[in-house]
Each structure stands twice: as C-alpha cells, then as structure tokens.
Length: 432
Image 1 (cartoon, rainbow, N blue to C red):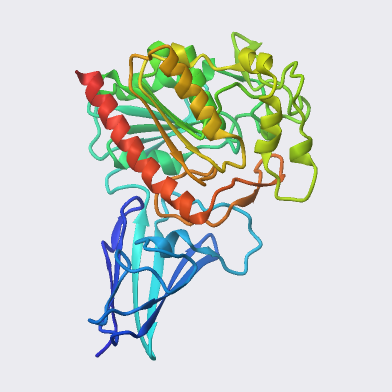
Image 2 (tube, rainbow, N blue to C red):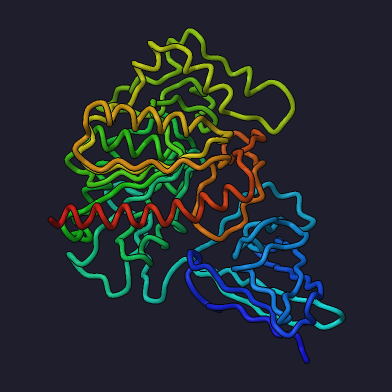
C-alpha cells in the first residue's frame, strides 16, 4: 500500500496549528519527514525520523521523533526547527503579508514516499490594507473583513530598535478582529533613519488619528509594542493615560533607555531617545555611575547587549530617575518576557513593572507571561525560531537575542494566545 501523508488544515492563518499524520507505513518502520519552506529565495529546512506505531501511523500531535532537528512531542516542531540551507543570511525569519508561506512536506519510509503541502497566511480573507501618510504619520492600517465605524476595537502596533512598519503583526491582529494600525517612527519613508530624539507627541497624534479614522468599538484603543516598542508602549500609557485603553508590552524595558544601537551616530548611543514638549526624557545611561558598554563591545561575537544593560541597573539613583511611571497607566497591562533575553533583561524589567503596579494596587488587571529559557524575539506562532544570532539592522553589530528554539517556539505560541485572551477581556471590561 502507498504511504499516505495528510496535513490539516491545508490553508489557514499562521497562528493555526496543523495536524501532520502519516499512514500506511509498516508497523515499527522508520518514517523520515522533511519540511521545506522558501522565503525570499532562501530555503528553510528541517528533518525528523519517527517510528510508526502498530497500525503503521505517525502522528505529530502524539509522537516524538527518534532523531532529527527537534526532540519531544511538538505538533509544529518541523516548522519552528527549520534553519536556512546554504545561506549566510543572519536575518531572523519574517514574511511579507501579501506572500503566504508555503511549506512542502515529504515523508519517506522503506523506499515509499508521500508529499503534501500547507499554506500559512498572515491576513484572513477580506482583511483590507491602507497606507497611511496623513498628519505626518507613516504607517499601515489593516481592517477586519467588512469593517465599519464602531464595529471593532483598535490596536496601534509599534516596532522596536529595527524600526519600520510592523505589518505582519498588524495583519494578524486585523485577522482576529481588531482595527490594527502599524505605525512607524523611524527607518520608514519620510522619517529619520534613527531612533534618536523621537517626540512622544507623534504617537499621541497616531492614537487620535486612529480613533478618528475607525471610531473603535467602545472607544477601545490598545497599544502593542516589542523591545524598544515595549518600553515605548509603557511610556505612552503613562504619559497619555486617557488615550490608551490597554498596554501590550512584549519584552519591554521598565526604564527609559538612550538611543543605544539604533542611535544617530552624530548623537551617539548615550544620547536621548524620547522627547516630550521638545525636551529629552531622562534615560538610565544619563549620569550613571556604573554603566559601561564593555561587556557588550568586548569579546567575540555574538554579543549579549543585556550584559551592558545590567551594569547600568547597578546605579539605583539612575534607575529611579529613568523609571517609567507605570502607576500612571489607566488600563490593563500584559507583560511578555524571556529569562534568557540576550538583548536586555526583559524578565527583570517585567518584574519591576509588575511589582510597582502591585505596590500601588493598580485598579486594572495586570498579567505577566515569563518564559523560562525564552529569548528576546517573541513573535507569533509557528515560524522558525532557530536564528538567535543576527546583525542589528541599524548598528550592524552581531548579537544574540537568546533563548532556545523550543522555548522560543513555546513563547511565540503561548504569548499570542495570551495576548488575544487579554485583549478580549479588556474589551469586555471596557464595554461593561
């Protein structure tokens, strides 16, 4: 009998797990399964070998591989364990919204072979996209299918120190029912190439534009940011509390930081990042008695930026001056972090935020999802998580984001599920 390979669903959003199953192998036979995904001309591949059960089946929701690129039971292990084939690229895995990911899967056993493929999409059918170049704003608005005034809650999405427009996350938010505005603030057309001296009023304009444009359901506008964007959304929630309904902070900072690796070279990495009323907001490197870049700069690549940040946190006065006043936020907060974050200590920072909100008896829900051995690159589910080492998109410094592929994959999956539940509860509370 011919080997049979099935994958269900064959075509769905990227955050939907797939059921991969092989049938009609010989009982006890070794079944090798290979997954191949091509992105921007680079082939990503993984392989694992399984032992068929007494019925001649292999089921990835049930079976752990006997050998291969991942271990243990992991229904989507063949996806997150993929690595680039014959490519020097250090680029971490991402994908243009308009180009669905197609993964080809091949199962082989005793000379027999079966093939199947599946499609992962970032945007559901009917999601619309609009470039935004209004009121000095540079971004992209994604709307759920059939969206109209007052129909959907909204979220504004902010990138980290890589800059640009985070369209993939916006498209996925829109696919899950949110009017999603991905707003750039540097490294995008018409904007600075650097993070230095970014005015917070720009984001206030973005919040007000989004409200005016989509008239969100229950007047609910959340802000979602990662890394420097995670620092930023906490800062915006504290600075403009009446305009922020909820805060989603991926691997955030609890203090304001300097320009660091995304700085304007003319200003330097110890120059200011954020301005308010035209004046720099104090940051942790400013007048810091213990801070040094040596642990980051010295030694072989890849570098752990987190080691330099930890030296700055040894000066309690500098930390106190730069601490984000999260107690001023008027809404629920969710924090997402990893204990092996190589970029900065997001787990420690999240604890600082949680502790302060607990201390002041924050009257809104506070949730913290902290992933053991997770790194800095917490994205969305079911993409490869093997590329820890990368060249920073502004400084070019070869660094590591930290974490293990398995733990990063767990963080990707559970964080997205947690964020959707958090936002749903926040919207319902707002309605009540």
